[in-house]
Image (cartoon, rainbow, N blue to C red; front, side, top):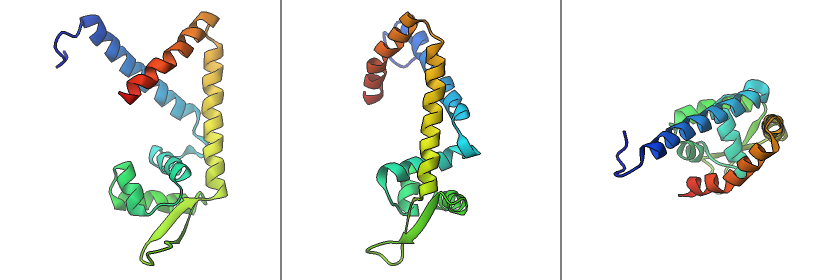
Length: 147
């Protein structure tokens, strides 16, 4: 089942179950917290602009591993909806920088609140021992992500 020699079967099973559970949780968070029904690509682009500031279409395409034409289509939709705006590049007159508008930042804020609200409500349904187990597991999950 695995290319890792000497991996105990119970660890292989746990890895598969963990991967499936994380995927299910991520999909649920996306479903529960998508104000305005933005696509995954649109949300990822808004998040990147929020974190990194202004960027060109090519920079965003590279960062999101999509073709520049695909990123241009994403940005066109976001611009049409008033979530991003374009401005001239400060040093290269041939390029355009895209950045979040106030509405774009608000959409990101609402999405974050909706995700947190859903996850808090789901966590509140766990018993105190389960909540503590979850809290304790966070550091381990972070370490896996950084490995």
